[in-house]
Image 1 (tube, helix red, strand yellow):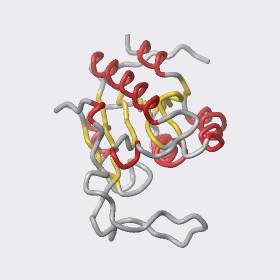
Image 2 (tube, rainbow, N blue to C red):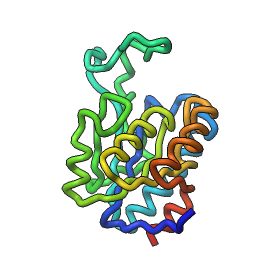
Image 3 (tube, rainbow, N blue to C red):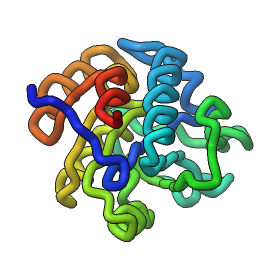
Length: 191
């Protein structure tokens, strides 16, 4: 593995779905609280260095009319969501300089202005963390890769719906499209 160096002026830390309605789910291999602690560490270090912080949350219409419900073997849950379901968790300490993206799909690029905002700020590297590894994080990572961004995937600042799918993404998919590193190494790379 090559040494990781991150230029804060060309790097964005993109945090996926650390919101009230998602962090309460059972996750593996790491608990939501462990992922939140690691993500906050990365966000804080990146902020100190002057990198862009992007806080992504999923939400939409109260009646769910703008959500996808395709025929599927394991369909998404239908019904009304609690009013605060999409709210970002306070642990992220949202700042005025943070970019906040509301998405309606798994990935943070589709149907949002994330790509436009990153390009206007001349971001070349995207650091990804959040919940869940195999859905929102992986969808966003694949899309970022296909758009030509360099990727850093913070393996201990993300977790999945189960340990196997997390391990598959981190061990088989992510090393093919970016660099997989721990939170401590990512924070140190901004120094």
